[in-house]
Image 1 (cartoon, chains in turn yellow, cyan, purple, blue):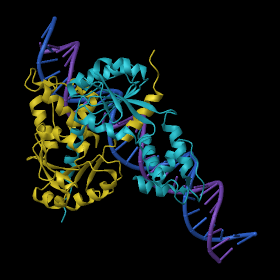
Image 2 (cartoon, chains in turn red, purple, brown, blue; image 1 turned 180 degrees about the horizontal axis):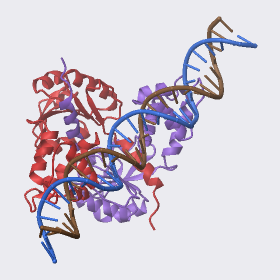
Image 3 (cartoon, chains in turn green, yellow, purple, cyan; image 1 turned 90 degrees about the vertical axis):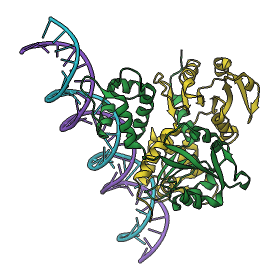
Image 4 (cartoon, protein in one colour; image 1 turned 180 degrees about the vertical axis):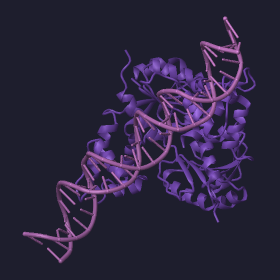
Length: 205
Length: 205
DNA sequence: TACCATTTGTGAAGCGTATCACAGAAATAT
DNA sequence: ATATTTCTGTGATACGCTTCACAAATGGTA
């Protein structure tokens, strides 16, 4: 659902302005800064049951808390990273500290030489220990950065071990029970789409 | 438009099976292998003006060609990569050879020590030469992998130099004239969304 | 006090996309 | 030759999300 993404975006902006004066924002300000419309903002906040004040807008710190209550697991979610190629290693620093609720607690790679190392504070395990570690750490969210040919099998192993959400960077279709959320970020397809629209765009003067 | 993405996915699968027998596919096969429905496939192919044959399906090589005619620039699109941090360097190998039509021909970084190097066959330039190189190479598509704080300015410079499509990896809102296509791949927001749905998913037995 | 300006909350309408469902066409079986 | 099956092409329908538009609320102003 798109609403979830917008709520994340709202929160990111709200955190930037938290602590400043004034202590509240109008729907039109939030919309302007996050690339949507005032009506959309009001509808989204209505949907999560957060009420504003006529003529004063929405309390910033309260709204940050409300979005957190809605989106986040109270204790945060441990995340696994599967595949320590170029892309996988590039993603580790993103979550090394930044995010308060999502933390990569385990990385896996089929190359046993990578096992035992600690990268960006994250312990690396051999692929064989995937199920054991996922279960032990109660990991339910994973990032998949393995080659396309290995993606399906890795996704199935993750699911069997208890993972319920996968962010997949491999250009491969992953079919899993619908109880598992799979979001594929396919860079090639995104670029092809962008090139398509860019080609149709009028030239500058 | 979602149709463009699906066409890319269709083509990827068709290329895998090209050359094998039989030389045509049914809409239900294509749907099955690409995660959509037969009616959707037929509608998409109808929309690009590609006709199949009753009881025989769609000719594979002809369909690959038709999707190419629809999606691709005839001579391919040169692509720029802006920002040679961890993520930027990880993306270079993706397009180093793989893709027949999209080729990263120039990379930029604000760190002048990276200039002059050639990574994965791609020449690196200092950020100061961005406009000049974009114009010279007639680049209209760019990948943005700079820090969030630098994303807006970089996007504006790219647009002013003639770029019409940007794949943005920075967690920042980029507001540009609507003639410019911007697709943001925000890893943090994708993960928050996945974690949200994972949390609501039923536990396994 | 009465009025005006502004902002929220939300039912209703609008829009774009996906799905349904069936006519038409072609291969196969009888 | 005729019936049957199975596939495409597409008008019509359904669905989900977004936007509209306005009542209700509230602070400011005369």
